[in-house]
Length: 402
Ligand code: PMP
Image (cartoon, rainbow, N blue to C red; front, side, top):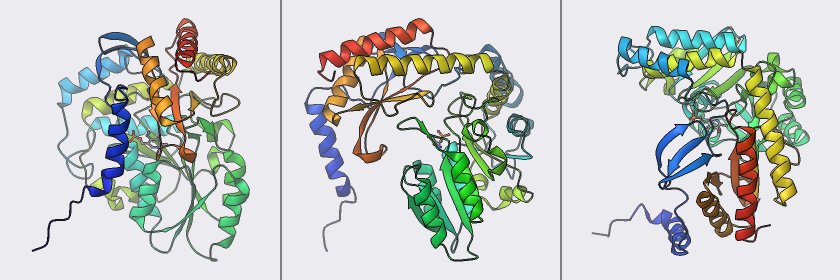
């Protein structure tokens, strides 16, 4: 009898890296607990009031009184969960209402809601692009996009981040007549940069490809109606599938795809991550519906969030930090750290100041970067943004990054 192979041995390098980092005495950056959440921008962490600058709560909807009231009402009226798939017993009036709200929000004909955004990408990509089809995608695509590609078994052809020429070269090489899907994101969440969607989609169309755009980080904020980067750049009509999530600007959990494709509804029967999982709880879809409808008229909030983004970007640049973009392009401002160790030290110094940001590291980040990712919320006041710049400056000096 041979010894059992420990299937966990492949994680040894990561286990060592983690224990080496913790041995330096730094607080575990991936073990933070929010002991109490006071508002979209403030929580208690380690017994201390902490400003939140590392959530996806871009539009600050999590404590909106109408959103909360809708959730409570749905709990009373429909119970705590559906205990079933959308195609069996799991479609309640609330699921139809949230899909209608999405159709109205995007001015599109079809909307399909998934239990998470991860599942929306997994489901739509794997179902529409299968064996023999080609997926051309940005190398910095989100994990859920890569996993969707793998699950569908299509030929996967990545190109250099935001490089239009590289994308065209890949498209040119695909055999005539093959099914082609180009997958892009509106905002890339690690550096907070946006895609030149207008140009890229024009190229994709030239080669007869269908286009899917993940607008997870732009919904509610970017574009005149908050429909995302494609709306901002005037090319939403050329997007075949928009993927989004309720876990960011909408302020709850869930994912979706909206489309004008005339055959889109068949997805409900053939998309496995839609069929073989329980639908969202009634309270979740009720909060999402209310939030989405309020985001349709959130122009003032959007304008304030843009102001905060510009102020923070300028403040951190002036303080001497190296940022992920030269101009603010979204609600995400990424601060580039020299290495993981100093990144973790800086992260901890900020937490001691009373500021929470995301510590992002490979493989989630491009080019092996360690990032302190700041994501702003429309509920951050101008005063909080100034406080944040002060905290960054003090922490940066304390750990000799600036
Ligand atoms: N797409 C992108 C670009 C994302 O950043 C994320 C989540 N960070 C998702 C999809 C998945 O969203 P969800 O949290 O709803 O699973």
